[in-house]
Image (cartoon, rainbow, N blue to C red; front, side, top):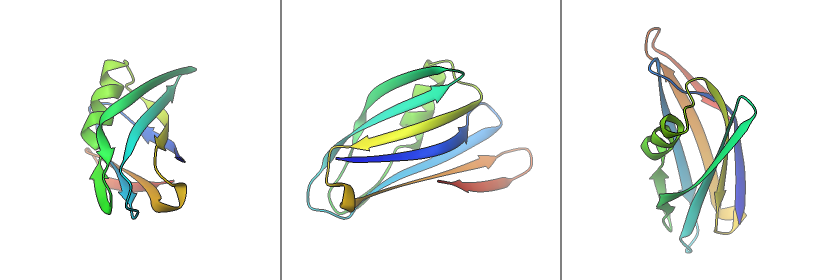
Length: 106
């Protein structure tokens, strides 16, 4: 499968996130997310799947998972997709609401 890291995304009321999983292949894959913040790692299999030949937005589900986990600051995100790695690309972007700044992260 595929394993991609987003080194940094902030969470909390001042931020909005955009996280997408692009699957250019013919096989759908389950998506598992690890959030690491303040020395703790939280893992969840998302209800969203990386549909074949499409882009899947996992932003809202990851933000809800971060809130459930008590994450209100910076987190590292690992996105694992059960599909061939060469067909998967993960991108993360955050938006700082007070200043309207947008940052693409890798």
